[in-house]
Image (tube, rainbow, N blue to C red; front, top):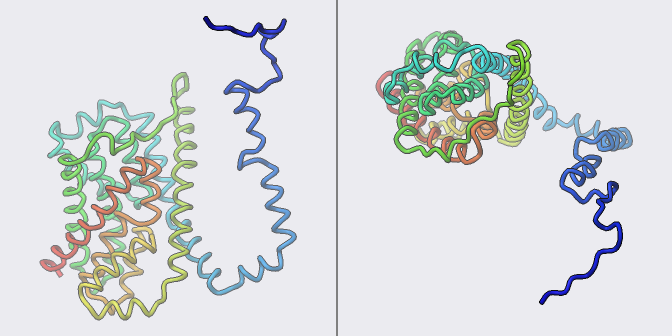
Length: 346
């Protein structure tokens, strides 16, 4: 027999002022969130009080180099990120889901190279390809084909190939080598994902509901969502790239160029760390004349497929588990593809 204590009169009535429910507790904690105006005021006060030390720290050569790289990465990438966001919104709102089922072959093995070649029509960089690939997955495109498009679009579109030709006027074979190596790696990665990838490794990109909204309102709602989502990860990646660029000694490059194998690995790693937009990377690597053409090809193939900002954006769009598996495999395959194509064409 159990004995229960009698409740005092009125105890069965809920106290409206007590925040003991989940909703009330969440509402009561909103005043101390990180984006609270109080936090902003405190940060501004600290900056005003410590403006002398802050000014001296910002005037240091290392900080000036950091800010230069950070601003350069963001300024280079942001226009193409906006382009990708706009294309993503167009795909999400105006393109019917049945379009992609008709445009791509039924068999995933054939859809991968078709999607890879379709990357040639997008005049943007890797920042633009991530939200577009996310929209393709949301529209029911097989992930293998969407990932092939994600990898190929930044490297084989007309703007990038034209920039490569201008950057290497004495080596026109670099344009063909970049096109072949990038498309080869993109297709092989798509086929590998179709063969070995698991559904639980890829988190479907989130999308706010547009029910009850007109086409125009749904379009701008999609744009705002993707800009805030992908833009934040772009800033994180740019900060990491600027930090690493500021602390890596330039003399390491000269020492690495002496060994062919080390030269390829060094430029591949450098492409990941610098996170340069694919429209500008050819001009950067063309100046590294101490390295072989094959090593510089590795820089051009690896960079648009996996770098710091791109890893952060892939993790934010498809999930951290996906990025931790996809990025290392892409990096290794991009190096292998660069060496094979470089040996034949360069």
